[in-house]
Length: 471
Image 1 (cartoon, rainbow, N blue to C red):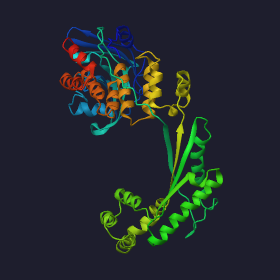
Image 2: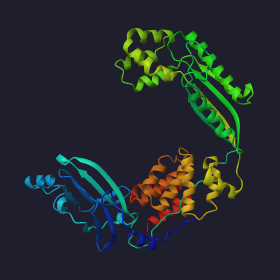
Image 3: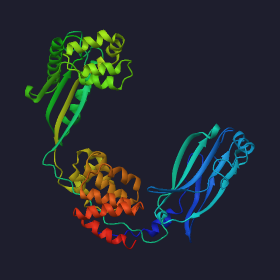
Image 4: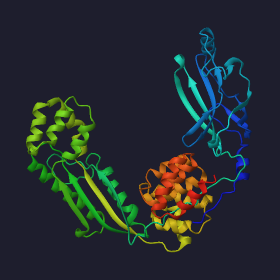
């Protein structure tokens, strides 16, 4: 994608005079930011008409500039209930933040409080965000609650805002769009039986879960179900041989039940079973608070035969064992099911756009990319395509890289950082991290990352390194 400068001065001016907004009980309007020589000037009007402060409470309002790892607090406005106010006066303290704080008594607070502040200007403040931070204090200066709201999303002094060219990646095409759905059902059987009774205990609900999963894809014209698998587990109480018989028999019973609801051939449903669910037991014990948790874990991890393990737990730690029988063992007796299916490919861009609006989970990453190429780079619609793609594929490195790029274009460095954590180690991801560091004001880190990306073949990195010399 070609290198470009985002000429957004008019937009930033509009952002510097925003509609009323703020934190709970407080509104800020007529918000202005401006650079005045070597200072940054901030002024606004605080609407306090809906703010209520208890006698033993204090509310501290602090405007704050934020950009990447940089932040600067402006002088605060403190509103004090009667007891809090006299506490500070009696103790000779300068309220919560010192002598620069504007102090108001709650009983005499105005409906509107003008606010003006000057702080030394620093280069990182270009492109910064103005927030209003509220803290509610109780006795002993304890912070009870905190809240933030953005007053100005991105400020600039009117100069051209530099944005390097970003390296989006085209996802690999999928030869077949294979997907799967899985879940667990907890079917109850009478003691030592392997026959499913739908009306027994909660079986109707559990069986309905399996059918709902199958029906969600089976009745869709764009989808073809290709396989179904069932794996059943028994819990460790009783003999291993008996549990093996129960687990296998109950698996076959569930298979026969599903076949009775659909026209699947017997070969369509693959089955397996695990006589005793020791992995599930270990996972439960590892996070529980049983008195002999460590000793039971050692027994589970030992090389003892399963029946001997269970006997040792039961005989040496009978109270813990009774807790496991009641709280853990029922959940170990379950059937995991997995429905595999194929979604057809969408080759018409207009059809892709319709699917994007209604069932985006049907699109492959390549199809998302296909839609994006028909839109204006940097536009709201363009960015939303990549945002939706990463919601559908939250762990995919390419989806996270492209979403990070759109966040960088918008100036949302926090969201970009979140995506970059999962963007992988491709040269393009390395480059995006370099751009993020540059826009955050971390030039040393930026230069190192951009040099690595350039050496790895990212052509945009070389140009951005050149641009850094004149920024």
